[in-house]
Length: 305
Image (cartoon, rainbow, N blue to C red; front, side):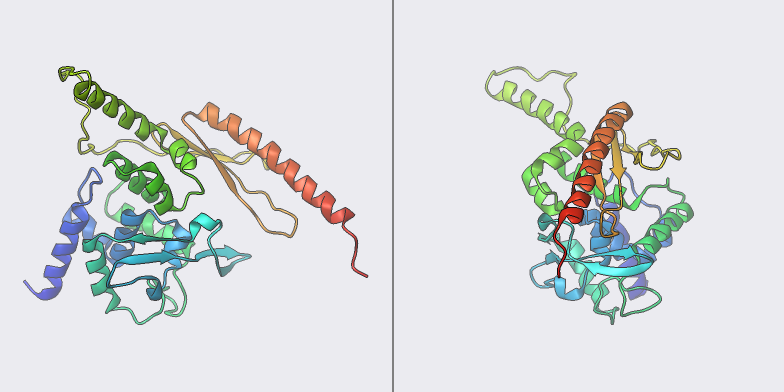
């Protein structure tokens, strides 16, 4: 076996060692090799799509494994734009696991661009988030895997961290949420199970209760899911959109154009479609009121002479 084949074999073993609940066959793994390092990093950090596309090599300390997130890539009027993260919490750093860092060290030797994941078209440009979304769907289709959104990889990371005992505040910092309450709201289905497990352990430790056979709720490797994400039907303009992210988790999104011509999106999360519709409607009313107030301020502002 040559050196290249040995490297690919090690990479497949490292990828399948991630606690994802499934393993890739050789055929599936070969199909995604052109974005292997990117997908491995995503499943190890839960970065947003625009954040991972905007990474530069100077953001990564190859000695300590510290990765800084300082910018994002997105499109404005058809042009790729580099900007700071959308919130202060988005500016953060994470420590990469040693196996992931080793993969990136080897990968770095094959890249001549300042961008960690450069565009296949231009080495001096970051990868286009829209093109990466399409590439992921091609990889999944050829590998005979179910279709998921790129953002679902972020949810896989977060769910896996919580199921393996990571503190919610630490996870909130890693993924760039403004507060840990946001993380708790989005992943309540995971934290509820953690609380039930903790209650059983407390009962056994303090109350000296005997372990119950039916209460076998210790973390187990999840079996492959048959869940299929719900795609919302076409809705009326101004009513936002709703999609099912994972089982028992719905996301509502509203992206109005604010004074100044830029879109600013906000999201809500709920455990049922009906609840998500209610929260989304309330958020839309609030956002429309905010937009109207901003327009009034612009109208009443004194004009410069």
